[in-house]
Image (cartoon, rainbow, N blue to C red; front, top):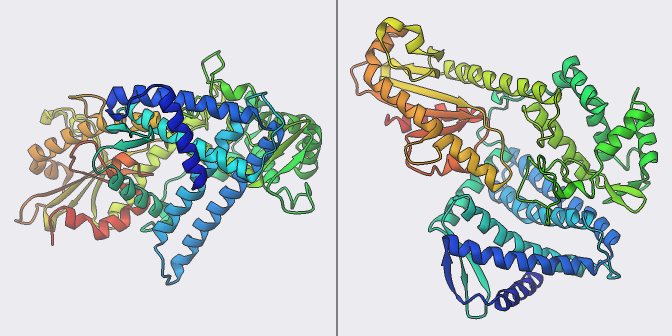
Length: 536
């Protein structure tokens, strides 16, 4: 806390020296002030880093980052395991606290690590724990300002900054913003715990099938000179460094010269070969110059572009081998997370970054398409557990031309409960995860629309809802479903996806749509459907 306060005091000095007057600033005026302060404060951080021994700093960041990630994982696992016991604490709060307390600080260390790796500046200063805490305090303030600027730039929320008479800044957001964040954090924590889930209903890519797929591995061999299975196995060796003989003792970091590391992979992995091992080591090595480059831009950025994700083809989360002097160092937990990042992204039909690989990318897109199809099939299957009257992928305009229906596209799933006169229309969508504010804005625009009159995917759903209201009786006849009981008409509109995002918990405008993850759909239908449809 004292380091956080010291950093705040230094930021206040920067604001004072910039001549920014005390007051309350919002929107574009706030962004201007925030960007000025953060740019100047970043230079202070750069100056402080230049005073420190660069190689010491890199190693310290690797080890602190690993310790934090391991602690976060252990706390979340403990909360999951407690589900089978009565406990006297809030599991959801425990998961969110672990993510906020350890995950956030780990991201700060990752930023410092990438800063140090991408810079040749080095000084005589020793990197002590006190120095690390000082740096993290500074980065926390820098990221607070950067986050507010991103929110303003992307129109995600109304935000601003208040500068008091002591030149201390306080970032503010719209009324209720904190409550919305808390609610979403709890919803996200539920997904980490698997609450309300039926794991058998989850829709995922086929990890084992991909590893055994000749087409998929040929694509990797053609573009990279090694296959997917060899990449994952190599990361597994790095993640089990002590067990695999890199050190006699458990450690927060391990080191080896590149050639020695390749030789070790050859000895641990059947039929790998030295040439492939060296390619994998080179591929997983964090490039000092690549850290400052974005895909498609042939320029060096002035700062580690933390605001980007997919355009960053070199970042620590996907390349865990860090040059430190004449050796490569890595953290076992970071290697494990890296393996998960590669495995989960490819399995889910996308790559961790925009690499531009000509053979791999089409193969990965096929995985995404298969997931989207299975999402519809799985939703149909789940609805059939609750009613026999279910139709999937029906387009009334195309199937019944003689009726003269307007074209509103196809209904991914329609379900009907005649005794309650209840009709449910379901849209199944697979949106790739987002990691930056810009990505979040992209997903929001895709689901809800970009501007006045454009309501994105929701707009199409609303048109189908109006179509149902107008043609309900005839649609039931065409489907061959029984006449409804003589009770009021009921209607429910669902958006079923693999994951839940902020905008699904807090839509930017009022919608009748209910957002449900496919793995919790069965539970939702049992406990929520009749309630939201106004049935007792």
